[in-house]
Image (cartoon, rainbow, N blue to C red; front, top):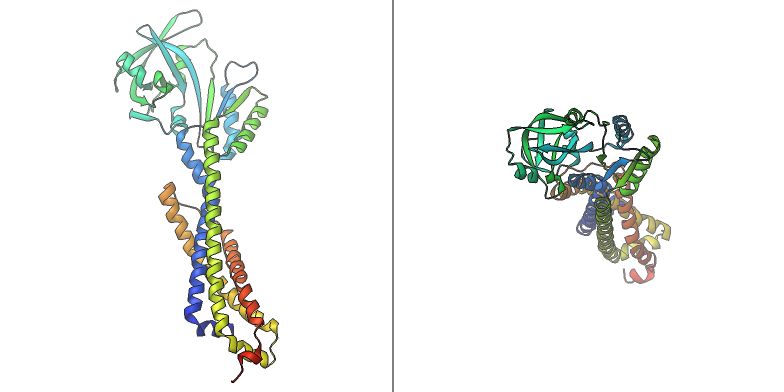
Length: 371
């Protein structure tokens, strides 16, 4: 009876079904984006650099290599984008001092992807990356080998040849530094305790989660290592996330309201058309309960079909938005299926309440008068 009733009023039911499909499409698409926002935003913000720094703790001059390995082990569960340690020493070239940073350049590429390199990244231990200001000061050129000088604890000079393979441009203090493998500093300063002055990490976590990760590292290293959150970056990420969440909530609410009005109006028109049919059923002994079941049955069928089709179109919609906004593919969440169908059914049944109430008030004597 429900199926035949829908088929007899194809035009109006198609309008109601299309309204539900559009509403379910937008809602499921926005929910898919909402569930994927933390991952998408985190990946975007990782291109702006590290969001947590590990520094020396109590009575420590440097962060030992063993502690770096422990940090890597602790953070491995968080799927870090990169973890890079930096040691800074003053070296000389032509008796002019400047800062040299020993690090793992393969990790620096991950923690600082925004660095602009004119040339190539070093891939050999004697190759270095030179900041623009250092290059201008010494007139350094790519592909050329130079000598830099360190010293032992008694002041004896130690020299090593390094090859410049890239010029670094960031617009910041990094341009005042020469970067190379940590082994270069270990050779130039053999008397100095080997280790790192600071460790940068880029993690796909929110600020509260970063703090928990920092506390875990501090505890596991017996406070030999402390931590600092890069507040500007994490605050910006949290702010953008909150604004996007609010925007999605408001748009979803508006779409559901429009769908509710459209479906409710259509169902009211259907009730008006079927007044004589309803009156005839009542005259033949049908109770109000049966009338309610008929209309709610039609609503459930429309909501179920609209919800299922909305899931399919919603995923396509979410993928298009994700590619256009974040330039990344969105992942499908299986939990969206029951949520979307439940919302479609809820909106359809809610929209049917007033029409159903009007239907059960039909008086057979009045609508069948003269028949």
